[in-house]
Image (cartoon, rainbow, N blue to C red; front, side, top):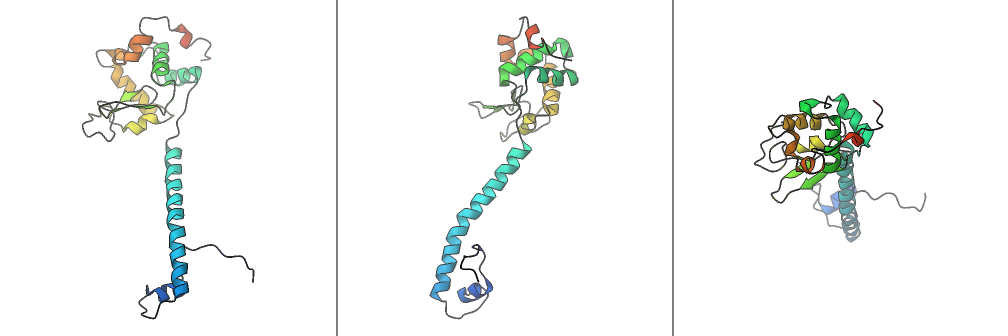
Length: 194
């Protein structure tokens, strides 16, 4: 028999449980068994908590991996979704908007003072367009705000198209008005292979 100790089990053995009175035995509790059980409890609680936390964190990271697009890669994706010329806005308008709102990062989230969030590559706000934990959200795009963080951009583009149908169009985004509106935007799609 090897002198190495085996792994510590978080569950009591049948004999330990009996001596602790867990299985209904009323026999005297041995001091050594008590110490062993107390040691297992102290070791297992933090270890199990850490394992559960690591598992949950890995689930969150895998389900919601952010992507930072390159300029031309994003231009291709947005073109494939039909944004070039949508509501009179060029593909360069959309690429410019995405750069100045999120830096092409699908996982970008900005928290506002009123508790709302701006989400995803176009920083779509939760007050009106998506559902998050804020109880007064209107959710006009009929999506959860977390859906707008997906790298595949489908929900984000559909929601952005809905916003562009509003009377102010892309003017809804202050960053587009400040950085893109009325400017020569040809550089945003220059050199991109379509």
